[in-house]
Length: 239
Image (tube, rainbow, N blue to C red):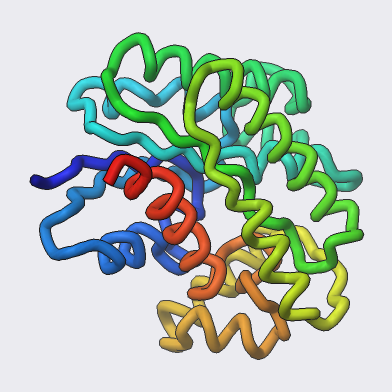
């Protein structure tokens, strides 16, 4: 029997400059076991996801995964281009931790009210690879909020942040400081990947990054951890 899975999120789920965790997830399972639907929009905040649930609810799947909050966490960092982001993503208020938690809770509330799907909330990938950096601490802080929402809304918590933290500690990566990805930097990765035909793992290796291509978007190692957490903590739990 085929399980229909909707994967909700931002650019990590859209997978233009991030290795496609949906593809890895599908390949982890027997052929025909999953039918995956992608709902990922570059740059989305939890607020944007809340505004765009109709397409998921119109044809509800059996399982829904939600990976959102990386852009909310990035906006909390000093010096981030918050005003530009607010304008580009048409946010009605300045991003904050409280607003993120409120929006994510509303996402789960609506999905629970209007579908019968099993809902899994992923904690965030680690921002950067220095666990003591402000960026990594922000992704850890927002991941704790996701855990709180999962508990309050009776969703399944998928511990991606914890799994990636373990991987980084084992890898003992070079202490490269976090650098936020500007639109120009994101375009640079896209040009290298699409025009110059460099695979994302090559870009990652050249930058000495363990899980990402640019401190945010995932290489194969990072995307595999996303697929692994979804598979082991959500899809196989009742098998």
